[in-house]
Length: 304
Ligand code: PSU
Ligand code: MN
Image (cartoon, rainbow, N blue to C red; front, top):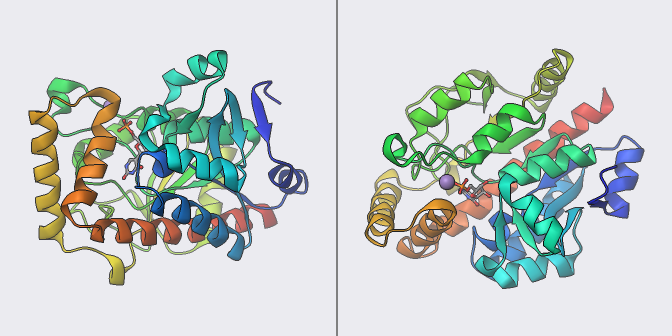
C-alpha cells in the first residue's frame, strides 16, 4: 500500500472481502455546494450508496494524508471550511503531502486515490472538461487526462454547459475514453437530460456497465470509463433558465478576470446564486441518482 494512503477500517474490510465499494469526491463538498447543504448532501450520498448495497469511501487529503473513507467529523470539517480548503488536483498532491495540509479532491485526485486503494467505481455530479474559449485560454480540466490514464469508472450526470461539451467529447475520443450513456444515446448536460451530442455507447443496466468495465480491464487499457447518467426527469431544469444563468456566470467570470483553478468553483457558485437555489436541489438529486447506479454496478463487479 502507498505510504501516504490511509484506508478507513470499514473500507479496508470491504475491499479485503471483495465487497462492493464506491468512491466519492470531496471538492463537490467544499467547492461545489454551500454549507450546510454540502455536508447534508455528502452524508445522504454515503447513505444512498449503503442503501444500494455498497460501502462508501469519501476521498480527501487530511493533514497531508490521502484518505479513502472519511469520518462524519472530517466531512463536516471540509464542508464548513468550504473554499478555504485547497482544491486539490494532480499537481497539488505533492505539496499537500509534503506540507501536511488538507485538500478537497477533484475528480482527478479522487480517481488517483481510489485506484491506489483498489476501488474501481466512483460517483460524482459533474466532471471538468474543455472550457469554452479553450482555443485561446487552453483551460482544459485535468479530469480528462486522468480519465485517459487511471482505470476507474466515473459515474456522473454529464458536464455542465459552462464547458464546451463538443470539444470535451472530442478530447475524450482522442484520449480513448469510452463515454457511455446510461439509458440514453445522448450526452446529458448535468441540469438537463439532453445536450444535442451523442454518447459512444448506450447501456441499460448495471450488469452491462460491469461487463464493459471488465472488458476494458481485460484489454489491459490504462484508462478509465465515463458513464453519463441523466438527471431524473422530475428534477431536470428548464433549459432556458439554466442557459441564461450560465451565460451570466461566464460573463461575470470574464469581467472579474477569474482564471485557472478558480474558474470552475466561481462558475458553480454563481449559477447557484443566479438560480436561487433551484439548481442546488437538482444537483443534489442527480448526485444521489449517480451514487445509486455506481453502487449497483460495484455490486455486479464484486459478484462476478
Ligand atoms: N463540475 C461540477 N461540479 C463540481 C466540479 C465540476 O459540476 O463539483 C468539480 C469537480 O471536483 C471537478 C472539478 O473534478 O470541479 C474540475 O475543476 P477544473 O475545471 O478546475 O478542473
Ligand atoms: Mn482549469
